[in-house]
Length: 227
Image (tube, rainbow, N blue to C red; front, top):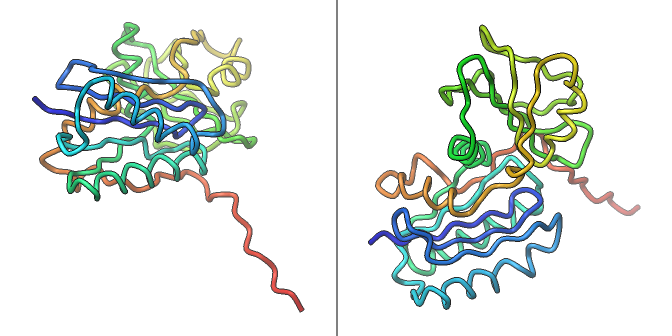
């Protein structure tokens, strides 16, 4: 048995899942652009009780590390790291691109000549973009850019599958420029996938650190000094 707890609060959702190898023992997920700080811990407690598994039996905790919403990332990462420290187990960070890519590969067939574009909401004019070939290999470096400025990379790419919670924006911007298919069922990371990916790094957690992955600086302003 390998018990992995998966946590995602990186985008516009809140998702937790307890996996025993490939089997999901319990999960909770909901769409929420804010409020994860109040919802996350009760959701974790709920699935652990439902599965009848004590926290100290966990082999590790996997958490989404971005890119995504700055506040949501901090909530998920802080919770996962604190829990992992308390039970002396590895805490593993999985990017939102990695988990959404696996979700797409499990749900749809990505044929040769088709690229997969992952579009993640940033709550600003730019969105977070990752582009992959049919084999899952990145076609370009992850970036933050406006939907209308997105360029399609990859030799022989004639069509595009779009996923993520900003996919509708990209579909509107690229419609007419390339054959576009949006998958509305895949918008936010699934904690089951986060946990599954995390299990692969149990032996080498240093290769998947639970640190935030930013593609743009957080919108934080320093307080002005009073005169």
